[in-house]
Length: 359
Image (cartoon, rainbow, N blue to C red; front, side, top):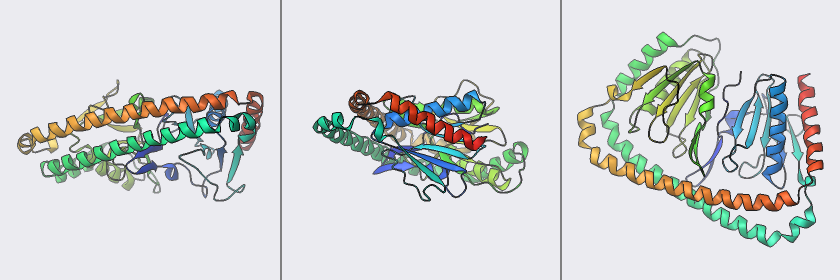
């Protein structure tokens, strides 16, 4: 079984894009990596969808990575049992092979397009691309502001959190619930949610893969990240794979959710932006770890920060909606120049090569 049934791995953050593709696949340990290159990500999405359908028909487990800018479209795919990976190498990921042909194969889709038709529309494509880049930078500016405000809230909340109590709770929980596993697994990071043109998109389907879903009720963002980091540490001590789901606005420092595949257990932080999933097996209220009097004394400032963050996220969603509209305009030019027959031939050749490795 794949560990995720949907996530993001590359999202805009402050100052640029933040990627977890280094955790997703390593050319030194992978069976093989296919990097899809070409004039437009439309072709990559079609190739990934074709491979995914074939794997599903053969009952081969897959892990899916979705595109932020093309709703429902795949951006990468893993066949974890076979250690095979297929990646969209277009911007902003821009993958290049480290060990060409030995560990990675580049699949080009440039020949699937009518170059002459695209050259005739060069001026329009450049103009749209420049406007789109402006909107992308605007999204990053909003997210940088969100990070700054959240940092202020974190400073307020820090003295309200009993970290020793959290550590003791994590120790007891792990001793009771986490099985031991041989060896030491490398932790992974993903984005289970992200800001898109549709709002804050959460990949709830991934949670359905886990028999036990623990919801951490933390509406202030006070202690969930601290609890998750402690639970991650205890899981790693027991040799379990820890998949940490990071926050888009502060991926280096803030953990939002935790997936433990071998334990069949997920921890999901529920708040305004990540409503609790339909199935809840246990709820952990972070209020048990907080000094409620100190929290109440700072409630007015925290609420002000929450309103500011809400407004900034709404602006980021609006900017992403404009980016998607512009992407749709670019896609329309490329769709008009697409040779579908040649694309189908490329998909057939790629699928044959991948599944020949499986046997």
